[in-house]
Length: 157
Image 1: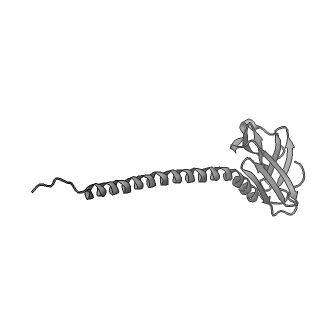
Image 2: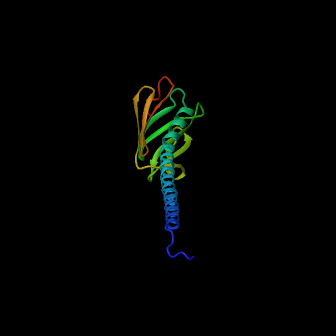
Image 3: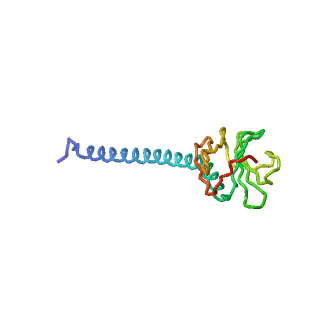
Protein backbone atom coordinates (compact mmCIF):
# COMPACT_ATOMS: atom_id res chain seq x y z
CA UNK A 1 0.00 0.00 0.00
CA UNK A 2 1.26 3.43 -0.92
CA UNK A 3 1.00 6.50 1.22
CA UNK A 4 -0.61 9.38 -0.51
CA UNK A 5 -0.20 11.81 2.37
CA UNK A 6 3.16 12.71 3.88
CA UNK A 7 3.49 13.26 7.57
CA UNK A 8 4.10 16.87 8.63
CA UNK A 9 6.20 15.66 11.57
CA UNK A 10 9.35 15.55 9.42
CA UNK A 11 8.89 19.16 8.35
CA UNK A 12 8.31 20.27 11.94
CA UNK A 13 11.51 18.58 13.04
CA UNK A 14 13.54 20.25 10.27
CA UNK A 15 11.92 23.62 11.08
CA UNK A 16 12.65 23.39 14.79
CA UNK A 17 16.26 22.32 14.12
CA UNK A 18 16.70 25.27 11.71
CA UNK A 19 15.21 27.63 14.31
CA UNK A 20 17.64 26.42 17.01
CA UNK A 21 20.54 26.69 14.58
CA UNK A 22 19.59 30.27 13.61
CA UNK A 23 19.26 31.18 17.31
CA UNK A 24 22.66 29.70 18.03
CA UNK A 25 24.27 31.69 15.19
CA UNK A 26 22.65 34.93 16.39
CA UNK A 27 23.86 34.23 19.92
CA UNK A 28 27.43 33.72 18.68
CA UNK A 29 27.33 36.89 16.55
CA UNK A 30 25.92 39.06 19.35
CA UNK A 31 28.36 37.59 21.85
CA UNK A 32 31.30 38.37 19.56
CA UNK A 33 30.11 41.97 19.08
CA UNK A 34 29.67 42.49 22.81
CA UNK A 35 33.11 41.03 23.52
CA UNK A 36 34.74 43.24 20.86
CA UNK A 37 33.13 46.38 22.29
CA UNK A 38 34.12 45.45 25.85
CA UNK A 39 37.72 44.76 24.82
CA UNK A 40 37.88 48.05 22.88
CA UNK A 41 36.53 49.95 25.88
CA UNK A 42 39.02 48.29 28.23
CA UNK A 43 41.90 49.08 25.87
CA UNK A 44 40.83 52.73 25.60
CA UNK A 45 40.53 53.02 29.37
CA UNK A 46 43.97 51.49 29.83
CA UNK A 47 45.50 53.90 27.30
CA UNK A 48 43.85 56.88 28.98
CA UNK A 49 44.96 55.86 32.46
CA UNK A 50 48.53 55.03 31.47
CA UNK A 51 49.44 58.72 31.15
CA UNK A 52 48.26 59.65 34.63
CA UNK A 53 49.70 56.42 36.06
CA UNK A 54 53.10 57.30 34.59
CA UNK A 55 53.01 60.77 36.17
CA UNK A 56 52.07 59.30 39.55
CA UNK A 57 54.79 56.67 39.36
CA UNK A 58 57.58 59.07 38.44
CA UNK A 59 56.52 61.51 41.18
CA UNK A 60 56.56 58.80 43.83
CA UNK A 61 59.84 57.33 42.59
CA UNK A 62 61.58 60.70 42.94
CA UNK A 63 59.97 61.77 46.20
CA UNK A 64 62.57 63.49 48.36
CA UNK A 65 62.90 66.84 50.09
CA UNK A 66 62.12 69.71 47.66
CA UNK A 67 62.18 67.34 44.68
CA UNK A 68 58.90 68.36 43.01
CA UNK A 69 58.59 71.79 41.46
CA UNK A 70 55.89 73.31 39.28
CA UNK A 71 56.67 76.41 37.25
CA UNK A 72 55.72 78.21 34.05
CA UNK A 73 57.91 78.38 30.95
CA UNK A 74 57.52 79.47 27.35
CA UNK A 75 55.97 76.03 26.68
CA UNK A 76 53.43 76.27 29.49
CA UNK A 77 53.39 74.51 32.83
CA UNK A 78 56.43 72.38 33.67
CA UNK A 79 56.40 69.63 36.27
CA UNK A 80 59.98 69.07 37.44
CA UNK A 81 60.99 66.18 39.69
CA UNK A 82 64.59 66.11 40.89
CA UNK A 83 66.44 62.81 40.75
CA UNK A 84 67.83 62.76 44.29
CA UNK A 85 70.99 64.83 44.83
CA UNK A 86 72.32 64.27 41.30
CA UNK A 87 71.44 67.76 40.07
CA UNK A 88 69.32 66.29 37.28
CA UNK A 89 65.54 66.33 37.01
CA UNK A 90 62.70 64.81 35.04
CA UNK A 91 60.90 67.74 33.45
CA UNK A 92 57.46 67.08 32.00
CA UNK A 93 55.51 69.56 29.87
CA UNK A 94 53.25 69.79 26.83
CA UNK A 95 54.75 70.42 23.43
CA UNK A 96 53.10 70.04 20.00
CA UNK A 97 50.04 68.17 21.26
CA UNK A 98 52.15 65.67 23.21
CA UNK A 99 53.25 65.34 26.78
CA UNK A 100 57.03 65.18 26.68
CA UNK A 101 59.75 64.41 29.21
CA UNK A 102 63.35 65.51 29.47
CA UNK A 103 66.02 64.27 31.83
CA UNK A 104 68.47 67.16 32.09
CA UNK A 105 70.22 69.30 34.65
CA UNK A 106 67.71 71.09 36.84
CA UNK A 107 68.65 74.60 35.70
CA UNK A 108 69.13 73.86 31.99
CA UNK A 109 66.81 75.30 29.35
CA UNK A 110 64.02 73.18 27.94
CA UNK A 111 64.80 71.52 24.60
CA UNK A 112 61.50 70.03 23.36
CA UNK A 113 62.98 68.70 20.11
CA UNK A 114 65.15 66.25 22.08
CA UNK A 115 62.45 65.37 24.62
CA UNK A 116 60.87 61.93 24.74
CA UNK A 117 57.14 61.73 23.96
CA UNK A 118 55.10 60.23 26.81
CA UNK A 119 51.67 60.44 25.19
CA UNK A 120 49.17 62.61 23.36
CA UNK A 121 47.28 65.27 25.26
CA UNK A 122 45.72 68.62 24.50
CA UNK A 123 45.57 69.60 28.17
CA UNK A 124 48.36 69.70 30.72
CA UNK A 125 48.34 71.64 33.93
CA UNK A 126 49.81 71.09 37.37
CA UNK A 127 49.16 73.00 40.57
CA UNK A 128 49.89 72.71 44.24
CA UNK A 129 46.78 72.18 46.34
CA UNK A 130 48.41 71.95 49.76
CA UNK A 131 51.87 71.34 51.09
CA UNK A 132 52.69 67.84 49.89
CA UNK A 133 49.72 67.45 47.51
CA UNK A 134 49.51 68.56 43.90
CA UNK A 135 47.10 67.93 41.04
CA UNK A 136 47.92 67.15 37.41
CA UNK A 137 45.29 67.56 34.69
CA UNK A 138 45.51 65.91 31.24
CA UNK A 139 43.03 64.72 28.62
CA UNK A 140 42.86 61.46 30.59
CA UNK A 141 41.57 63.28 33.66
CA UNK A 142 42.83 64.75 36.88
CA UNK A 143 45.09 62.92 39.29
CA UNK A 144 46.05 63.98 42.81
CA UNK A 145 49.60 63.11 43.77
CA UNK A 146 50.75 63.16 47.34
CA UNK A 147 54.46 63.42 48.09
CA UNK A 148 56.00 62.33 51.36
CA UNK A 149 58.60 65.10 51.46
CA UNK A 150 58.00 67.69 54.15
CA UNK A 151 58.04 70.79 51.93
CA UNK A 152 56.73 69.38 48.68
CA UNK A 153 58.82 71.81 46.63
CA UNK A 154 56.48 74.78 46.35
CA UNK A 155 59.27 77.03 45.14
CA UNK A 156 60.22 77.87 41.57
CA UNK A 157 63.15 76.41 39.72
